[in-house]
Image 1: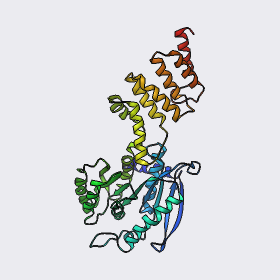
Image 2 (image 1 turned 135 degrees about the vertical axis):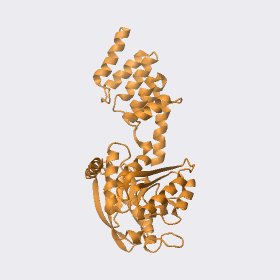
Image 3 (image 1 turned 90 degrees about the vertical axis):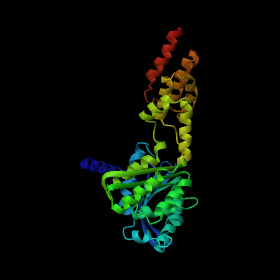
Image 4 (image 1 turned 60 degrees about the vertical axis):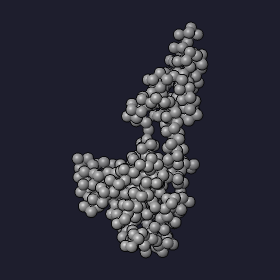
Length: 381
């Protein structure tokens, strides 16, 4: 099992090498010093000049950047999350000072207050100006830095919408503050992780915090918690990062076989409306407008055929033509709609129109020609 996990992590690191990683030295006025940054841009970032990308800030970038960047590149390659810009802030010599808080109010103080302002007032604005960032921003931390990232959550309008807190060493009132904030937060993803072999004080505090957070009834907030078996304070990182990304981007993923069987086939409402609403929701959640996937069109059309809901093939076909005008998919759906509703001439013309376009999925020119010829034979044309 350990060998398998090691192999998976090695593959993830190998994948990250395909991204465009930039190393920068950023001069901070707030800190009165320079900070080393690692920046991974998405594949084909330069070619996709009109595309914007979520921004993921990784503290402890000297060791946490690579596993985060590798997972982001891997998941986005398979369209399980949007391509994203990942920025690591190296803190090997400064992390304790960067995360310092006072023992009275338990808020950032001295270098900690300066580092807080550096992230919010210098680094994020600089990245927004320099790169094509989307509205969605996520921040990642581990133990000291995982406690620190929560301070950004407490702002009235947080600059980060996603928080990946891996085994945080929480300050004394931090748990209560997090619980209070998440009760009223909207459009926030909060991920928390510990492990059975984590440091005892950390593990106990996080299990207690989970008991508070898991009963919060706030549909505008998404909370996820992991307590990994047989993992330590350090090895849990390799499990937490992919779990956190999967949870945050659950709505972004393609329609799975499970969703097809348990949702689409059992819907009492419109599968077509489900598809449209799904993409509207992801646009609202992640701030990214995207074309509807071929896979999702096929899943919905298969459900419509299974349920013999022929009427919805017409709007589905028109939507497919709008989204993928170069493919024969939309005209195939229109052809099926006309064929099943007793308009063979319109069906034949739709199939003929599709024949001239590019093949996709199971649709080939021979298949479309067969549909045309079958109608001609049936009606003697």
